[in-house]
Image (cartoon, rainbow, N blue to C red; front, side, top):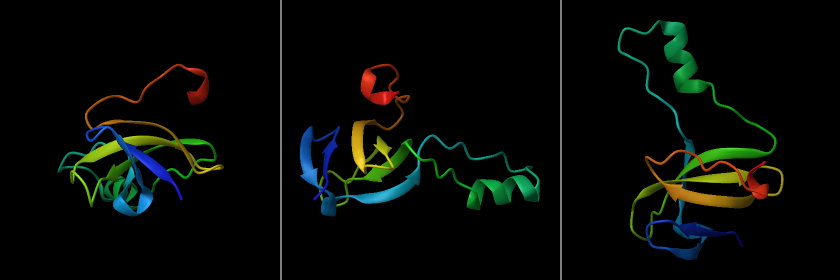
Length: 95
């Protein structure tokens, strides 16, 4: 079982309490964007091998969104941080 730390509750909780909400740090384009750019925003997402920033919802807890950096190879969550904060940099585990 995967344990995820909610940065708001400050507790490690089982993954069944959370819902994946897609890639983190996306910016919605302006209303006058072209159809090609709108399609890219809606449907094209990164699928990297390695560290990936994701958005999660603590669905059965505080019901708040937060971000996490997860290693897609090992499925290990390296760090979680509150929405609105930038992705943590530095440290050996985030290379």
